[in-house]
Length: 248
Image (cartoon, rainbow, N blue to C red; front, top):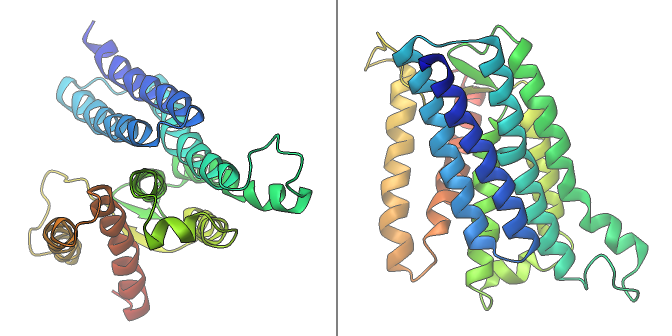
């Protein structure tokens, strides 16, 4: 029975993604983001269980990708799409122009490019201990935490930006590009025999410092806690961009 335990955990990831999509369609964005966070916990735990039980399988690998596609591909795309479309009258609003509706659909590209990202990861042998392109969970966390934040702070400047026709569509295009680009990115997962003084660990220490600073500064500024997640994963992208520019 032990070989089925990792797959069962992966299915919990998938279930959280489906429930998150339902919550997003009903306007419960904070709950949808919490379900996304829970999906990420299951996504982490299924790998731990597979290693601990020596229960790797081709089925588990494919099931993991399909679950990630729902939880970290479709769910964040739906959250962004629902938010920006809702700010402009909704998909059924007859007074909203076709061009506005098409612009509001741009966030759905994240689902498509997440699928490409996951497919590339499965066949790319370079990505055993690091990543080429933005990992889908990192992209999802930026999208999900952003929408959760603005849903809880309707009078903020960030909410005003997200209600427009520029910020979220442009963000979606940038994230879609980062998902499939050739930018090297370090992994957050630890592996047996890792050198604690290696460049990868230095990058992790910098990211941890960014997380701690965000966790202190954002509550002190009276901002919603979900912005901690947003700022942390934006820092993850910036660190990788700077290191790539420096050739490190």
